[in-house]
Image: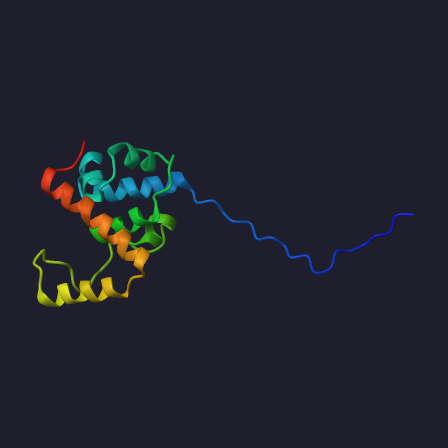
Length: 141
């Protein structure tokens, strides 16, 4: 005789909602068009290939965490806007970089570097090496 047994203590697993890659891609494209850049120009500023940017814009690939950070900094936008559409496309910032290295900027960068873990320091040094190579030789296209 089957008995009706109710499971007790079973947690319901929360369903993760997959990001809508098509909408993310449309927002990345809108950002690029706002700055009147070609895919090649935007990819160069973000140190990714035009192909990778194209795949993101066409909803075939999710932008990586480091790429999202680069977009935030380079294009004055927010990760939240890119991923969800919430907020404004272009962020209001109190201080925008003038391109001139002030002593305060350099001190702030060194403090940030010192606060990183050893792994974080290694990653940042690799990013800087790539940046210096690109600056010296121009972007690979």
